[in-house]
Image (cartoon, rainbow, N blue to C red; front, side):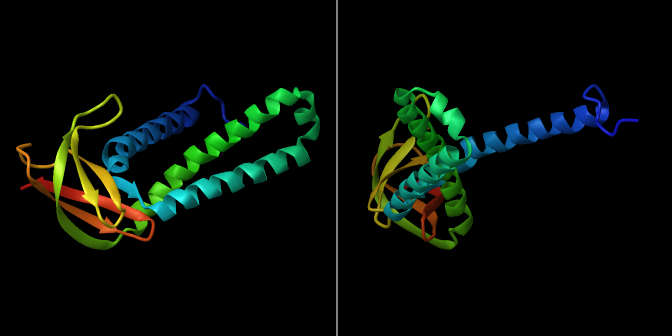
Length: 173
């Protein structure tokens, strides 16, 4: 009798379907609820870029060392494409890892009042306001603040951490 799981059985199918639904739910929660509230500071942006470069260098060295025949089969003009692809992929993964670190390590509550300007929604972004954050020293977008867009000032509540901030709520004054 084989110990392999039959791919047509419910014992295989149910965990696969539940796992796929869990991944989809986590992705939607991340994209809609968590990602728009996270803002990197300058140190985190630089650290993410440098870490991505190091991951790329390590990956290329490991590929060269252990998959040398596979790499040598490729034409020399395809090597930069491979390196750039690894750099982009590692950048995407590290941005999300840094964002998760910001979300989990931001614990110091704070708030400030600032003037704002309305920012309409785009294809990949929400409608909201743009305010200047003194801690990050840049303008950030805050999605869907409470109140009416009459102009004036907004109160932004946030949690700060060593790598950035997480906006918890905002209200137009």
